[in-house]
Structures are given as C-alpha cells and as structure tokens.
Image 1 (spheres, rainbow, N blue to C red):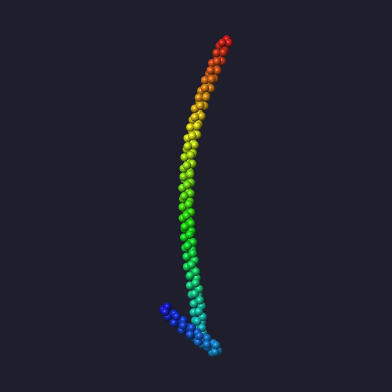
Image 2 (tube, rainbow, N blue to C red):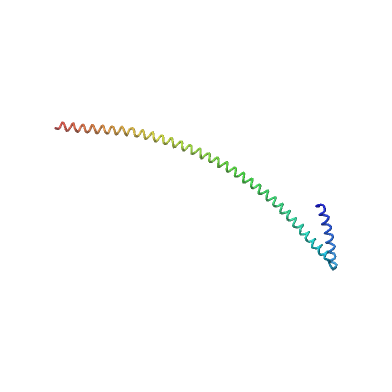
Length: 147
C-alpha cells in the first residue's frame, strides 16, 4: 500500500492543480472540486505534521541517547564514589582498631603505673606506722625514765 501513496499523491496534486486553474479562470466550482481542494489542503498539512513528527522523533532519539550517556556517567561517578567511600570506611575501621589497641596499651600502662605507685605508698604507710610505733615506744621509755 505504501507504493501506492506516491501515485495517489501525484494524482491528487494534478486534480488540485486543475481545480486551481478553474478558480483562476473564474469558473464555478462543483462540490467535487471543493472536496478536492479541501483534501489537498488536508494532505499538505498532514505531510507537514508527519515531517514535524519525524523531526520530533529524531530529537527524542537524540535526547534519549544524551540521557543514556548522562546516566552512564552518573553510574560511573556513583561507582567511583562508592569505591572511595568503601576505602575511606576501611581506613576509618583500621584507624579505630589502632585507637582501640592504643587505648588498651594506655590502660595497661596506667594499671602498671598505679600498681607501682600503690606499692611504695603501702610501704611508706608501713614505714610511717613503724615510725609512729617507735615514737610511741620512745615516749613511753622517756616517761618511765623520768619516773
């Protein structure tokens, strides 16, 4: 049927040209002539509309290609950012582990230092008690000698 379209269009163009000649000569147009003019106008407008549709479809295809390219770029950037975030998270986890290990060492050192400080303090307390006991004994001795 598509092969008939150019033939039909040419036949319509010839018929419309004859009606236009009638108009130029000032002859009266029949209903058939007016219908042919109207049909010719519709076909011309339809051709323009089809051309516009084809142009719009082409623009849509171009826009779809651009959208696809943009989506690919977005996906690439998203993947890159995701990798960078994963790497950063991994580094943060490693840093947190190191901090935890350092905190454990600090706690161990603090406990050891506390133990070392407590040991001499206990010995000092013992020495102080001994000195107080010696002082008390000396006082008693002095009292007993004075009496």
